[in-house]
Length: 317
Image (tube, rainbow, N blue to C red; front, side):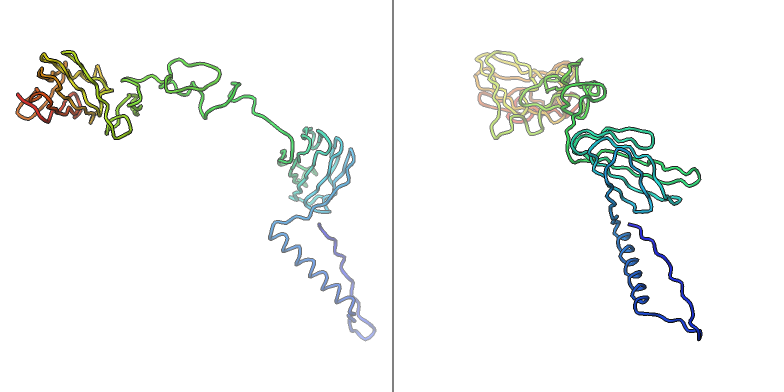
């Protein structure tokens, strides 16, 4: 709170001396102490609040302090602020007590929810003899509030982006809930428990194979012809037929094999198993072997990239 200090008028006595009494010295000490306390408070940013008695219309005397508080038990209008100095700022806190209270200040009216506190800062402009409302808002302390819509859309907000922001991955999903799962995503390749969605919008098998465990998936085939699928990644394709049989490697334009994708081909039956190249596919092997060496033999097919494969293991020409 601001304090008014009245200077003491000193006068010489008859012989020209200036008498100083103990009371006058104590008054000086008290003044110095008061100034020291106020300087410390300013350094810490501490404002001594001035509590105003509620009335429907109030005038604030700015010479009394820098922070004013009032407990509004009814609607309140700040009719005037007096005693301002050029550039002076004051803070005003209005608590809505007992219900919603309307506060009118600087020509504007705001409704303060019950139990909440409105805070505002006003600054004095001496050239126009006016107080400018620099800011005002409701602070916490009671009441409830909900977000009823986001960007014009209603419903439960389940993420940071709307469906329209995911057009590259969502196929025409325009529901009102804005919740989407993996089944809503469109991508090339086969989506199953062994694949993941890569950054290039392709379902792919992890480099170490799918399944996430120490076991491998065995694809048992009893026919004479089989074409590799993405789901075979990291597993075993086992051919079991008495007649000769073929495993075909399709081009990446048909099945989106990522670089590093691999699978093992095993001959379980007496019919010899061969590997065939799909359109545009180039399978390289030691000595040009494109068949398994015999029953129970196995070899690994690895995609090196750009439809170039390696076939290595128990092979024969």
